[in-house]
Length: 124
Image (cartoon, rainbow, N blue to C red):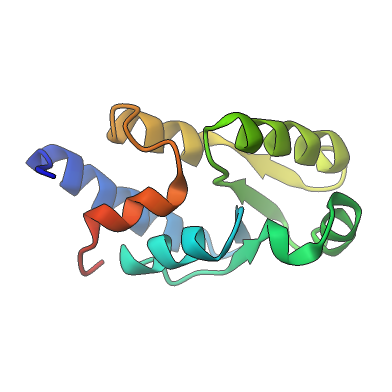
């Protein structure tokens, strides 16, 4: 797949910005999502939602972080999980959805699943 130069450059800036979020943890759905972010050069903390075996266990472990950056998929399941996480945690921690929105803009809506970012693999 051919990518426009500005798309790749914007994605690099996106990863640099994510890497600067030192007091945050990135929340993704699963292992392939985490691997895709790492392939792009992300070096920060990542939490896989599905490794917690349920929303309650996930919610109970998150308040130790100041900020949660939700990077869940844009599919039906991802939108549902995003709403559930927000409803459980919005009064306990800061939740940042801006990176998910940025990703949609940068990729012009082509990337609906975080794991698909692996197509852009480059050295961060």
